[in-house]
Image 1: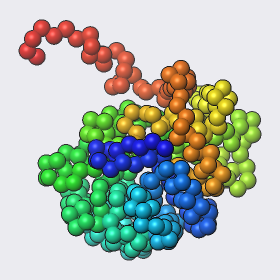
Image 2: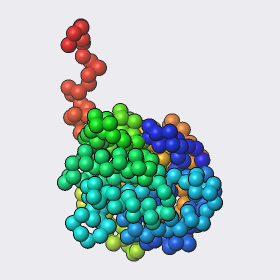
Image 3: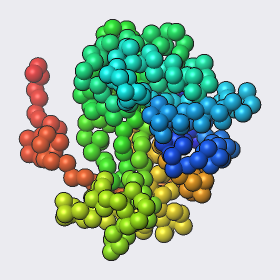
Image 4: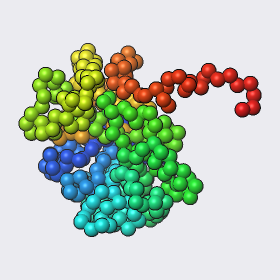
Length: 344
């Protein structure tokens, strides 16, 4: 397992992180603990959860696993969680207000059984709470030793930039990471969000790296999904490969390219998709979301799989989302052709 720093911080984390959204719902406690055991055996150290995963049960399952570990394992674990969404029924049981965040952080600390959360991420933007209030509350938590680092999740490019600007101007703890949806089927963050993160030193922690299962090969062009799967109940979900709003067949171009590279390398499609994402600009660690130990075992194989430039180019070409000409490209946007003779 390789390691990278957590964004611009000095904290070292594994290039693959263990996502735990399935813990307590799709994966029972015994299966969850087995995944944690295997992940650490493989050299992983970054665990990602949230206070709303499985109705707070995910954090509790992790806390009970940590309680059984040696001091060395507990010290090695880098725990990341999130807060923002409803944890109760009251009007203040959600959002990024100081009131909600202070209670949410304390509750997560209690469920996880730790004295300090390594990375506390705000789960999404809150249009009702001033960003300065949120950042001051997080900065206070850092100063009190309740969290080590601040992170963002599901923020747009302008939101990321505004957060960083306010933090810098007020001398508050600035975020070190952003957790966005990112995979071969969802690359639109490359237009604005990735450049913003690169400019400000935020590392990316991509979620849904396998596109809800599309990039594993489990869905076939001529076999619309049925039965107890996420797409079986709603074939138009996500990338809508079976929906009427998908006339370009880009989804299948990507799936075919991943399958071809995997076949040539003797690897699984999941490993190829994860390896591609692991090496994208600004990516710190890719969040795995396995339901079973078998799936996790396969995913971990991506840690040592390095794609060639030709394989990467093939996947890049098939997955190119095709940005609109303006302002991302096209006539009038190529500044390299300007002739400047001094001054402005």
